[in-house]
Length: 127
Image 1 (cartoon, rainbow, N blue to C red):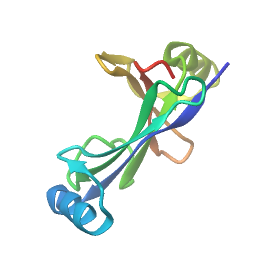
Image 2 (cartoon, rainbow, N blue to C red; image 1 turned 180 degrees about the horizontal axis):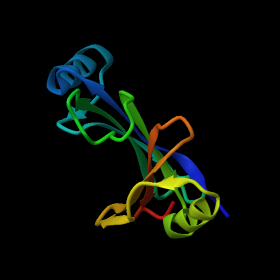
Image 3 (tube, rainbow, N blue to C red; image 1 turned 90 degrees about the horizontal axis):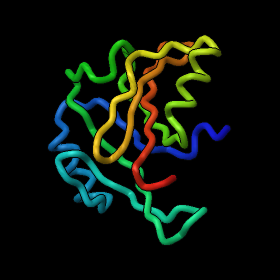
Image 4 (cartoon, one colour; image 1 turned 180 degrees about the vertical axis):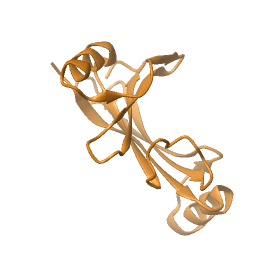
């Protein structure tokens, strides 16, 4: 079974996300929005389809990374989130929530052995 197929996003806490977006736009040329920056790429299996990786600063007071106390969270793209969650449950991995479905994909959160929150993402782009 396919599991992780790539990095879906890198999220980190900072004091001022707006200022951070502007700094990265000005100094490193990132095309930022209020949500950060999107890096598009072509999928290996079907080069006509585009995928993306997000880079996103979060306010330092965000609760989104909880229960982890870390200042970052990585989002991994996965192939079949439903089958993967079942396999992870059988392997004793801590699943934090139910699979949530949005127009752009499905999400679920898990914990690694050191308490880092991980976001799993099955995109609606076919990869």
